[in-house]
Length: 202
Picture 1 (cartoon, rainbow, N blue to C red):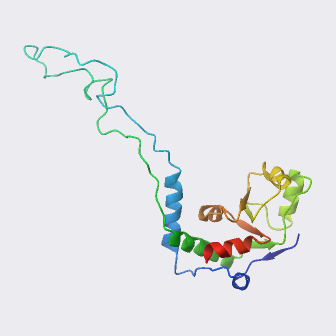
Picture 2: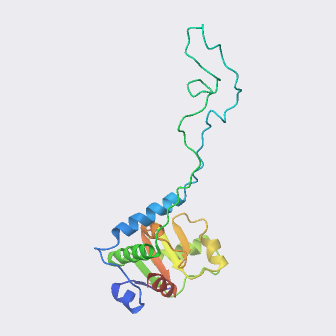
């Protein structure tokens, strides 16, 4: 399982489009912001005076008490009353155009390629499904620290071997996103994952 450092020339040979350092920074920001916004549930909710428990009975008579005029006890100024302008369930999701997504992916892949943090291997499989073998295979490729392994597919034994390793993530090239690339210290491209990435950046 020999590994090679991925270079700009390798990207050109694989028809992988990379963005330069002067373009795509805002696209990356917009896409990561959208990822995080889309994970919000938007389920925060408070009850208005029409939703809290209680009745509409007037709490004391209109005149003669010396107090301010009040209707029911569900008014916001009373303990247990409704909340004024409180949060309501809402949708925080953002939509990002396909062209912006492509530009962001090109920019991040370009930055990682220029930094020399991407390695390529012909194949990555762990036949025995053991975590020890999984870690040994990765250590032979790069230093064990926040590694992202990208391939078109992985067999069940490889997933089994890597599921308990917190600092490694196995991702298919079709599902790879910009946030995963930004959080990784090392990226390993397996086999024909380059073909899929080239298609996504074209």
